[in-house]
Length: 521
Image 1 (cartoon, rainbow, N blue to C red):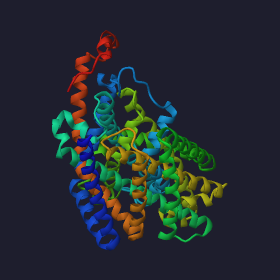
Image 2: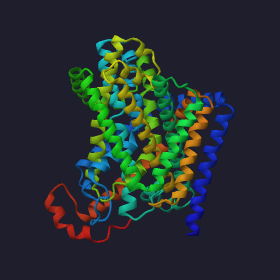
Image 3: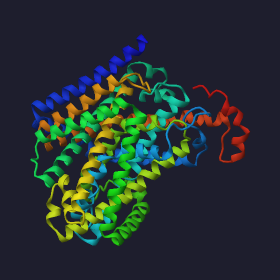
Image 4: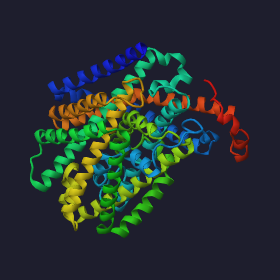
């Protein structure tokens, strides 16, 4: 116990110190903070953009390999373990944690932005519209979920099958050995905690800004940090209550609510929007996305400045953002996935959220572009109010806007709720049940960081945090690579020990081994 407390203290103190310094720096000198982080982020994106593309492509290829490999038969847990949550609730929880606010914020605004400023086509042309959906699907498609899947698999496999603590550092034992119990392990866990805090705080800032934008558009409330601070305070009370009530009650109920509100909003918009055009663009855009997936996964456009600049602004920026979110999402969906097979897990994580994202962006994006073509003022709106401007031009616009605000708030609560749980795990030696007090401390800290960043300069502070997310993602990407190697090394050794193969009868022959103790590392 003494050893555990000491290790916990190091991770907590180092991560808190780094975040505290950045927040104080950002609050005191927001312009300098934004300038420095922006310059570093730009340098990372331009210098290592190719590296991000290669890493994401390799991770996606590895996840697809697991689906067809005998390794996929292994269970994330003991042979007798059963899933803790029903499949519908499980899918809702992993989806809400993984995307949430981003879908509502960018669902219409990203396709519109690509339509107005496409990577290669002429702006506002038919080709630009095709590119708008193809690249929206790329940014929210298989690649981010592959990274989430890999991190979650590494954690779930080492924790539930090998009996390790729920720390990211412990997933690297097959490669680093006992070094994960020392300074190396602390560094890995600090990187994970830091990336989690930065990514989640940025998302909470985005949520507060959009809620403020909606209230301003609908009711004339001012758009400033005071209102945003009140929004953060109110939502903080709600998600702290949810966090205190426990994982199975709070997050599960809220995740189900998210799916109901999102499904309702999506259905109504699909009906009142250009339905046939939505279906046509969804089919064509997804086909275009799949047909060029390999090329787009590795294309950094070295000979096309227009597309190269566009990639720096969008895809490579997203790759950094998703990487910084992966320890948060990975830890959470690993926790809720005990008892499921690797194959079942990978298919669900790569399939369901991607399909929903394609439907969502097709519906919101095509509706937004169609409305904007008839009401040019929509194209000039900032992203946080653009969605509400679109709703205003549709039947039941006010009702849609109110549902959207409720959905943003619900996603806000779910993401923050999940984050407090994950941070509690990461700073309490990987315990599956961090205390309510620990979760509340992290919840208040996240809210305070998000507000300080907005207070530090509004969009400047938020942009600085986006840059910080990209910066924090770069060193963590090396951890992700090691996790991929470690998972394959360990799982493949166990696959050989159990004699698993693609032939079903061989699994039956070796069922006795599966019931026995697992292969030691």
